[in-house]
Length: 262
Image (tube, rainbow, N blue to C red; front, side, top):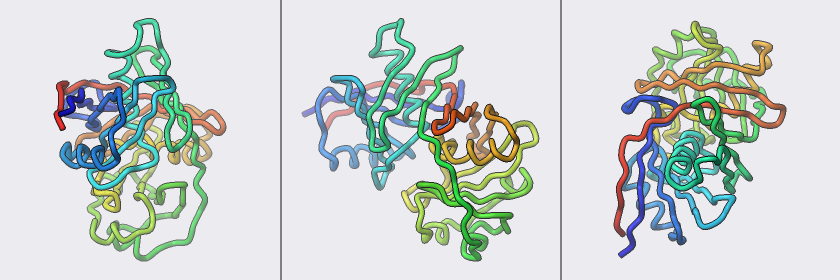
């Protein structure tokens, strides 16, 4: 029997029941990939992060209920908040992770946690009647990032009212689909659909903003942008483009902590 600490944190929100929930499991010894996938399936959250805390940089891996992913923002934000609160010295304001997407950094600043991730500059790609049919709306343009398809619309209302066909979306050859438009109260808004990896709609997607930040920075002529993800739970992000890196800032709220036994 192995007893493992587990925390559930709502990321990109300062209130519980909003933002994007993630489970965090700090580990002092390795689990098998099968064990991690089974725990993630049992948690049934969009992401469970496993953080090896025996040495720095801390190794981090992210699992949806159905598969491992190469990068996850909200679960990294949640993991950083747990490490700052429970496992690091009070004077430490930065934490480093090693991951399948390279070295990542999180830092505390003025009540926020900022993730330092690689920027993902999307390239324009061909139009797709299949995507338009799946989204039930006609986009302006289509772009492809490293992981996701980014689909541009003209109005925030189109993003809010979108009602996708997840069965059709699940047939696309990408991790997920980002839909985005200019915001009325923020620089841009978005939603993120990923039935391909077992998540019809992700509440707030940090990794998608590695693509959205350079995309919108070029269009609005700013390197510091405010963003909002328009899921039912909702979430707010502060994004900064630093050339080949992106800072993605947000707050967190802890929902629970305890132990699981396998």
